[in-house]
Length: 265
Image (cartoon, rainbow, N blue to C red; front, top):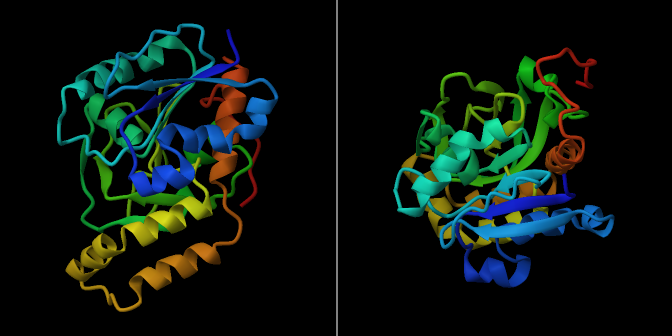
């Protein structure tokens, strides 16, 4: 097994964001710069333009977010679905984020839809379930965790056999697990506050329109989102990403079905 993680990119971010922070794959490689300096390697696949490589010796796989919607089908999504349906059988850890999380759920028979609660963006609170509290992806993370999010769609129904790990009012499925080593997170464990700040400012017109349709006061909506981000306090998403890399480099060492020590609340 190599010390290489395959990152499957599922689209391109806005040019203004890409110029400052890189594309979706760079969000992960930038967040894992310290691990890369210690020898962790990455292979990048743009699933919208090329086949997903087998890379049987990869230590793990990450499926990124995207501006696309899984229910607006494009031909390349069929190949991604096929990969996701077989991901659990390979034994290596797989982490599917935002669009990837939704694609995983839909590929296995779940349902994804436009979020009736509107955009969720900024620093948000998620509550871990009892299964989440004992899952190795959330090791060392409190039952009420603060993470960074940006999404307009959500998983409405989980596929059969999925284990719910975290949720909140806006998106009841914030994280889930399939089998023992395949995870989806609706939030972005790789995101930085600076990135989310830039996305809030970029999407301001759409965020105001979304809030207005739900009867939310919009005169200070964007300012409130930015203030909430600036004063978010401790964020736990990066620990999720670090935990995932740890699982990649210790394949087979964690069984989430076994009891774990009680975590901090």
